[in-house]
Every structure is written in structure tokens, then in C-alpha cells.
Length: 381
Image 1 (cartoon, one colour):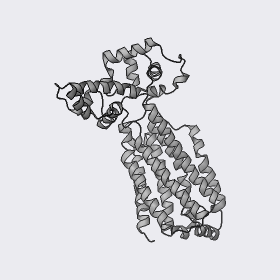
Image 2: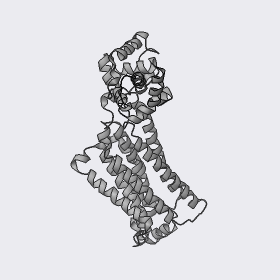
Image 3: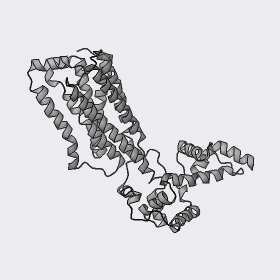
Image 4: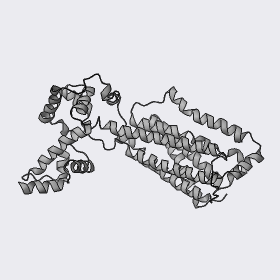
């Protein structure tokens, strides 16, 4: 068995995925639904890259009965990624019997491979492996396209779900940093690119008959797998600590869209003035951890009704609504030349937790940075 640069990264990625899976099996880790799904993802990734590894080392042609097992197990990966995404978004997310329907493509793939490959004589199996143009992919063009399409569909759907979630958290939290799960969106976007490149490469083999050296495919797969697994190791383990998902109470605010709530088309001026007066007199926005539920308790208005008032009455989501008050408060502090507060102190005193969020929001509202605003305001005074 010969090991070169191309399958070195494959071997490292496989090892890391297996080690991380074993770590997640520890009693304290396996209790979390997100970790259970992460194990499935990692095992399927290990199987997927093991398929490429045994092909590159010549093991597949020596033991053809082991071929395509990794490809089959990798079919579990897309639905697991989607469910993993949901488990990071919602704290109470659980696997239910209805989710078993997501295994249907896997069982279909098993049946297809049994009849098209596994029941064939050894000589036919070896011929299929020799004739395959892309490692781990069957000789059938349509089956190869189906596998790629299956992956791309679920990856796009997971990103679409994350994009909607990014909008939803702005309806609940005044501090959204680390709550939008941006790292997963970026990771899945990169993974989509990998599968699009793989599809283009696959089509060039099947249609254009470009018999390019497969070593380039294996190098690309190995490096991309290395980055994918390591990104999961870095971010997935600390995600539940940073943000463990929406609680059931927080999710209830999102259960009904504003136009479905049994309310008039717009809140009354009394409702708007009530919220406005409370914001001015009590300054709840100075609490950096303020949420729609906390503000609802303080005002005595239900969270759904308050969300409706802010969305329809002020034309904003909760995050932007609170952000406006914080920026105005920060502007007042920056105008006071007699106070020697630093920009960082102004940021914290105004209810912000993140310097990047503060600077970005301030510039969006005023067109200039906090430092520039302070200089301009103090010159005028």
C-alpha cells in the first residue's frame, strides 16, 4: 500500500473524524441531540473519505466487496447536516419518528447498489471499479448526478433555514452576536462549492470524456475534508456554550407571523405611545442582554403583542428597534465633552456587548464612526 500527499490529508481527516466521534460518545456529550447528529455526520465523512483512501491505495481493486460502502454511508450525511442545523437553532429539538422519512434516500441507494454492484460476480465488480471515472462514484451518470443533487439540495436547504433563523433572532434578541450561527453557514457554503466542483468534474468525465488524472481529485478532497473536519472541531464543540438555541418560550414568539396574529392591521397610537414612553422613562435598552420576552415582562405586554407593535407600529424588528435607542444614547454620551469616557466605555454604557457590532451599527445610523462623531460634536460645542 502506497501513501502519498493526496491520501495523507484523507488519512488525517478520517482519523480526526473518528477521534472526535469517540469523544462525543462520552456520557456527558452524547446526551445532547446536536452531538448525536454530529457523530452521524463525522462517521459518514470518515466513511466518505475512507472510500477515496482505499481507492487511492489500491485496496479497492484488491477487495472489491468493500467498494462503495463509504459512498453509501455518506448518503446519511445530508439529512444529518440539516437536522444538526435545526438542533443548534432550537434548544428543545429532538429526533422524532417522522424524521425516519429522511432515511428513505439512503435505503433507496442501498437497494440500487445491491442490484447494480454487490450481487455481481467478483470479475464484474472489478470491471466496474476499473471503468469508474471518478473515485467513489458509480459508472452510472444518472446515479452520480442523483448523489450530487441530493447533497446540494440538503446543503442549500440548510443554508436557507439558517438565513431565516438569522432574521428570526433579530425579532427576539437585542444582542445577536454568536446567535446567528454564522460559522455553520460559512462552512456549508464552502461545502456546497466543493460539491459543485465535484459535480462539474464528474460531468467532464461522463459527458466530455476528460480522463484527467484522479490524483488531483483526491488532493482536493483530502484538503477540503481536512478543513471541514477541523472547522467542526473548533466551532461545533463550543457552540452549545456560546448559544444553546432558542428556548420554547422564545420560539413561541416566532410561531405566528405578524399577519397571522388576530390583531388589527396596525397597532393603535395608545399601544405605540405606551411602548415609547416606557423606553424613554425606564431605558431598558441599557441592559445588554435584553430580549423581547424580558421587555414584555417589564411592560406588562405579551411577547407576541409587543413583537406586533414593534414590527407594525415602528416598522422595525426588535434588534433594530433597541439598536436605535442605544445609538441615540451613545451619541448623547459622545457629545459630553466634560466626561472623559473612552469609546469602549461608551459602548458598554449604551448597552452594546461587541465593539464590531457597535461600530457597524453606529456607522449605519450616522454615516461616521463613534470617534469621528465625538470629534465633530465637540467641535460644534
